[in-house]
Amino acid sequence: MRRFAIMTDDPGWHGDELRAAFALRGCEAEFVSLADCRFDIGTAHGLIIPGFEVLPDGVFVRSISAGTLEQITLRLGVLHALQELGLPVYNDARAIERSVDKSMTSFLLKLRGIPTPPTWVCESEPAARALVMRETAAGRELVLKPLFGSQGKGLRRIADIHDLPTANEMNGVFYLQRFIDCGEGNWHDWRVFVIGGRAVAAMIRRGKTWINNVAQGADCEAAELTPRLRNLAEGASRALGMDYAGIDVIHDPESGYTVIEVNSIPAWKGLQAVCSLNIAQSLADDLLARVPALQLMGTR
Image (cartoon, rainbow, N blue to C red; front, side, top):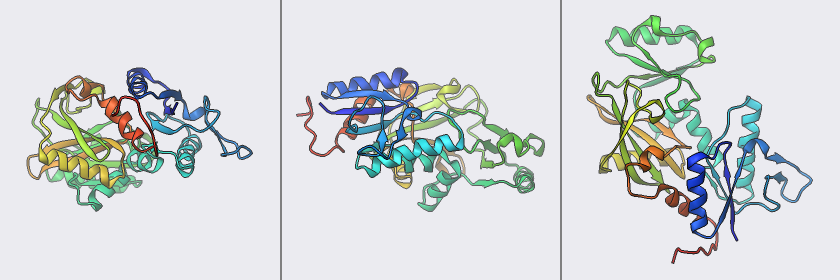
């Protein structure tokens, strides 16, 4: 029987959905914390994956817990090593590194010609202050985001120089992106889900404030996957080398649809509630298709 590792510290609903999807194809899936994995160069493969006497047939990365720089480097190193051993790692370490670092995400989107709002990233507090004064003097607002962060946590709307925190409050890095105004009380954006390079579902997220993340209380509505949304999401996923991704898109009244976030470990509970596609099954099937010569139950 094929066995897969789901890398997570908190399986929850998503873990249960994935495990059931693998089981439907006649495969076992075990939950593993990356923090419990380790290098052991004296063993056959140089890695110890708890619960696996031999290496798994593939790895699904559902979460990487917070830690020190050294801990995160080690956990990503384990993912890099698994890929070096020829295992499909979904998403792989490089894709995660590119998307977790918002500055690299913005850079790659721009480099690949994917519309994304003007963005500035620096360590210099005087440079950040000068930028804020220039943008606000022109009647524009900015969004200040943690360089590493998700689910809408830590976002700040900057309308005045006095709104800008110190460098210490932002861990020494200012990531500033031009604010896209949907209109007071009409806050919304789109989440498009991409699997295997193909956009498969979309929803509108309507925020109770200007932050539209489901984790911050936004409501979900089914949305048509229009050609424009599809092309933007698939292009963003390719730009960052994703196996699967959640792409956040907003409509700029001046320039049209634009990508504001790319998520390499996206949640999909809200999306599943408003779409008919079994997302966990589609994710599991895409990973299974990457395992050579895999004979699956129920796929004929």
